[in-house]
View 1 (cartoon, rainbow, N blue to C red):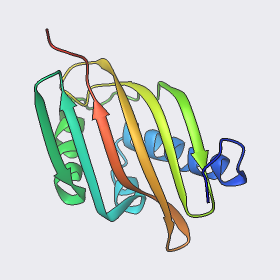
View 2 (cartoon, rainbow, N blue to C red):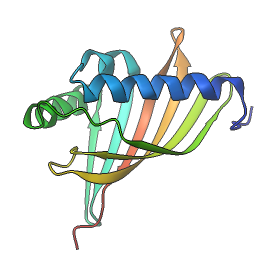
View 3 (tube, helix red, strand yellow):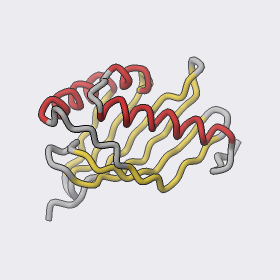
View 4 (cartoon, helix red, strand yellow):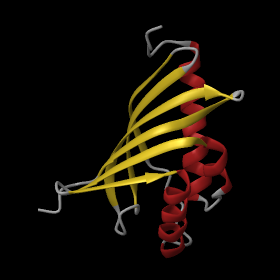
Length: 133
């Protein structure tokens, strides 16, 4: 089944990502464990040269380290470019302003979701950071 922007599940998937953004921005890292699928893969392109791959435990540890350095911040700035879904899968393309790379900048994320165990979970995330050139 094709994903569409007007599918009823698109609203639910956006709410899932909004909850993740709010939880992590408020340093509530337990939301990561609930939202990240056990087989999640992360691909982060840092600038134009460095590709960093990670799995769920590795990326959760990375975020905990970064969030420790950014204690006290609560930045939920987000610009949704695309939210599409069907009954079992969803995709979001979003820009976020945060300190994931160690400094505040706008990053772009392409996030794939699956509906499993009665909830939407992130199965793959591709993160593009600005070029350092």
